[in-house]
Length: 141
Image 1 (cartoon, rainbow, N blue to C red):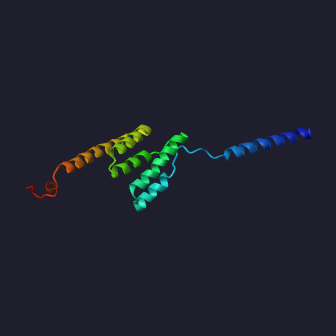
Image 2: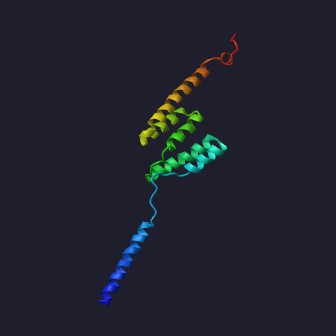
Image 3: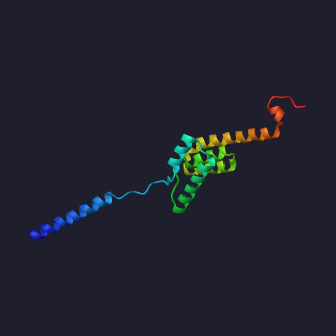
């Protein structure tokens, strides 16, 4: 009888130990954050060249894709903003469309950015087509 109680106690102790250790296991993150928080903070603080930031973020995109992880909310939108600032409008549109597809709740904001981008393209095209003298307010001869 004593042996049976001892075995029962050992079994219970072992089972509780396994449960405790299983509860301590780390869970895989829902998203691949990569350097996104650090790069974004540095960009907001110091405003480095957008090429440096977008390059680091592009590496994060490739790492996430290769590992089969999802990118966090706002990642593609932020990368699109960086490309817009750099004048790479096609890449900006591509990343904003990816953000819309990944997070449908971002659709109103992404649509707003896409409409704003169309306006910027129009302004840029107009500046390139109108002679410099007319843009500055001077009369063309």
